Length: 314
Image (cartoon, rainbow, N blue to C red):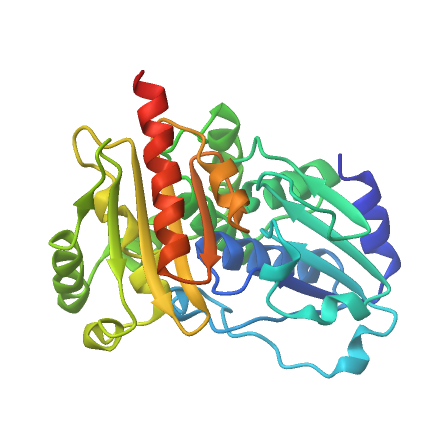
């Protein structure tokens, strides 16, 4: 599966690693993990990571991105990780590279790179990068393993989501052969400060329901500044405040921003990805997102989710 990607990697002296913007643990973990895999196995190569700030995941080692000149892309290889759509790539200079490779685990929606390794059977892009290292005979280190394990934990919901398989645990087991502190990973990921706990409580009180028990939260631009938080925390960070409500199979978080209304959709039962794609987004069968132009469009999306739950009940 990785033969062509490995052959291209070995050809290039300069490698630049991209991922999606507004990164989550999997985007950063796969990026940082691949960075160290290449550095550890090909010490003479010049390797760079580019993208926007880590923010919520700034605790991860090596999460500060490199600032590089456009000229570095001349004759370079660019990796694109954990990205199902070209519009989501953190830095569009990947198009200047001599060759591009994508590693991704999202539902395929479009061709992005010269070489495409898209495998939806993996719970995370970190799992896919780990498989790449193992299958290619590339050594792992404590630094690469810790980053990859962190991303695997976040995208599998601490190994609770349906995407978790026996293969997930096989790959995690390989990562744990390297020396790093598991407790430090979980402490940084899940130890909330009081400000975040208060924020979550505010969002619990905002939950509403459609006729067929789709749970949703809607945050307006006027409300946004009152929470003293960033769009990632309010949007993706708050969506799972609705995840364990009895009788709720689908939930969605809407957040108005200058870019449009950010939409985070989750389900524990249905494939909601086609609805996300319909509105210009994408992702996974049970966890997808989009950005729509206005509240009217957001409410149309909500009605589609409601209709999905209604149809499934009949």
